[in-house]
Length: 127
Image 1 (tube, rainbow, N blue to C red):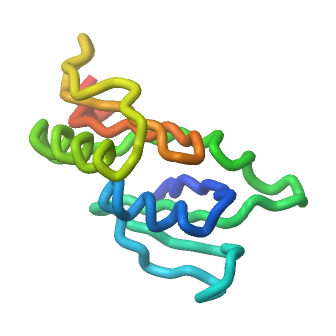
Image 2: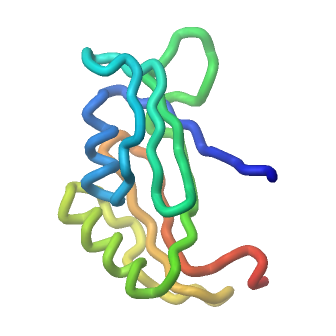
């Protein structure tokens, strides 16, 4: 089995809770358990995962706010629901739910740190 897990850097530990509130992620682990820094965090959405940690000086990982990911959802109603939820939680809508020419239903949002999040029903194997 091969699995890709996006990894993101965060400026603020509270961004993890923003992802939970805005996009519906489940927070599975955060190390250390308290404080302002995040050495390692694991969050899940459906069958997908992301990992995150605080900004680092060692050059490992991209700068906070520079991440982008596309998440496949089960149906158009889920796209509508996540867009509504995310905007209510303070995410910026860059592209409201729409039907692109290549198929599916999708939307794009930016979190408060600047990361781009796209959600849609299009699956690459559908092309």
